[in-house]
Image (tube, rainbow, N blue to C red; front, top):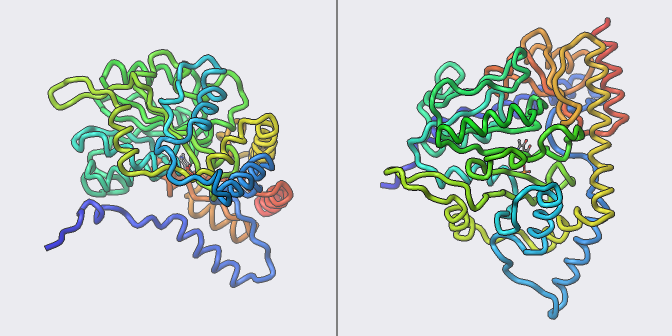
Length: 408
Ligand code: PLP
């Protein structure tokens, strides 16, 4: 008899975006004359930078010629891309990361999900709340949690984000083995300082734990004091793995290219306490189950590091940051407490009412779609997330409508 992985039955229906879609469709059907402005989903809206498009085209042409055609590439990613990533994102900033510590992949989402395969099932995991849901669900699938009770899975240590701690959770009071951190944060837009991140690195070192650091939004950091990488923190090379992506940096959400940094000195332990280097395990997993990102996509990603590419990606992020600044300014002017938006594309707003009630209000009164914070975890109740991924004019129009609606 073929049996299923029953852990899948513990998963809660992820109804957040489905419910947003249903409510939006119902509103639109009732008000066909209104243009609904969507500031909900975290997907980019601007086209790819020209430098990437040109490199993409050239690479496709190479595939059309027998002399330059390429079949399977290296599973870990072409050296031309890994060298550029290591140089531009790490070494030129004084960080000790080499090209062979970088694993190019088709997404930070996949990597975040896949990485936990190299850890034991009986480890204790600590996950922030509110949170990017992938960290929780992939661990449920792997059997690292109990069942779902009153909004939470048994067995997970939830790291609570609150107004009082600025959505930077306190260190756990108990011993944990695997810690998920994400900065700039999705959904809260919060950023972490070097000294706060150092506390996490020290905690991981003291507890023989490991940090999975999701830096998918690092390109939105404009304050030089804030860390773009966990490897800016002394001691992190032994206790952290970092995820990065071209999705938000260069508009690659539909193209798919990301990378994971696993330092060669990063360690975990066997059941009897022997040290094991994680680089070797991840290399084995990646090369066994993955056949590499396509050549044209890696060429397009490489172009991000050309002189034009750097300028164009900066312009792209500047565009979204201008939207974010506008959202934050306008929502704050209405008296709402806001987090994020200065160095992140998300603005996390205390709506002073239940998340879904505030969502309904904005939809009904302003025809603007946001994301209810409670969809990201218990601690998100009372908040909404507004995303800066849209056209500037539309964001301006959305803010004008919200102002009018809330002042009425
Ligand atoms: N990590 C975080 C925190 C995200 O918010 C997202 C996408 O929204 C991802 C990872 C996914 O990145 P990718 O498109 O590279 O899979």
